[in-house]
Amino acid sequence: MRLYLIGMPGAGKTTLGRALATALELPFHDLDEEIVREEGRSVADVFLTEGEAYFRQREAEVLRDLVDRTPRMVLSTGGGTPCFHQNLEVLLQTGLTLYLAVSVTELARRLQHAASARPLLAQLPDAAALENRLRETLAARQQFYDRAPLRCTAPTCTVESLRHLLATYQASA
Image 1: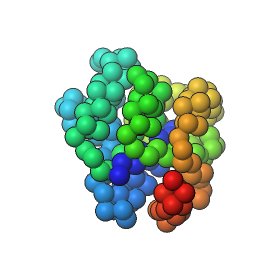
Image 2: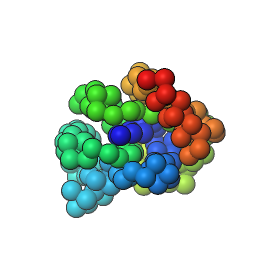
Image 3: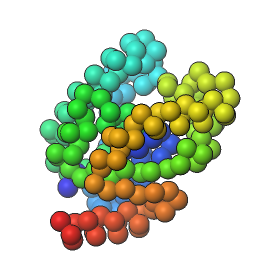
C-alpha cells in the first residue's frame, strides 16, 4: 500500500503522516526531506538560489524515484506537489491519495510563527497578508486537491479517524 497525503502547508501532512505510518506499520517518507537529502541543502536554499521552477522539477524527479523504489509507504508531499509536472497523475495511479482539508483561518494560525521558514510565505509582512496568500494559493490548488479520492476535514483528522476512513474506503473498493 502506498498512501499519499496532500494539502496546503500547515495541514498536518507530516505530523499525521508519521503517526499514521506507525499505526499502519508502513515506512514514512516526507518528500521535502527527501529533496533536502538529495540536494544537500534546505528547501528554502533551493528556492533562493535556484528558483521555484528548479525546485518543482527536482520535486517531480524525487517523487518518481521514491515511488519507483518504495512499494509500501505513507508519503507526505509538499503543498504544491500535486499541481506541477503531472505529479497528481503519478499519485493517483500508484497509490491512494488523501487530501487533508484545513480552513485558511486555521492554516494561518498554524503557520503564523513558522511562515518565515517557508519559501513561498517568508516575505509576507503580517498575519493579514499571510491569510490572503493562503486563500489565493488554496484557490489555485483546490482543483488538484479535490481529485483525491479521500478527504479528511480538520479538526476531525486524527490517526483513528484516518484509519477508519481507509478501512471504509478499502471495504467499498
